[in-house]
Length: 77
Image (cartoon, rainbow, N blue to C red; front, side, top):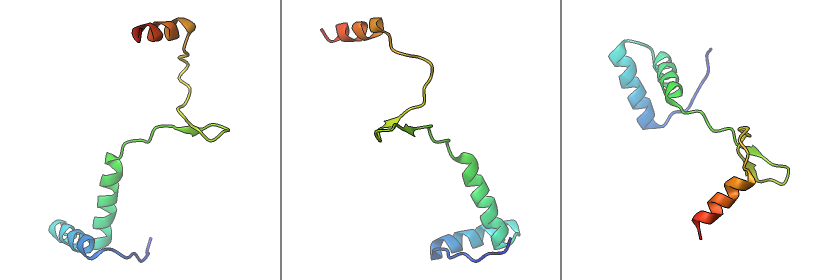
């Protein structure tokens, strides 16, 4: 796909050096670098928003029991 992008001067210089060192076009170098960056990204946690706007983690199936709460409270006594 052909498109125009605006790069910061330092990014353009680094991508150009990367492309020249590998004997590929600037576009191919940018594509390669973006794919490498994408491969190193960590997935974001699945944080949902409750109806009242508070962030919530997804349900895990593990609920708190009254015994668990009493045990935790006893640790603070």
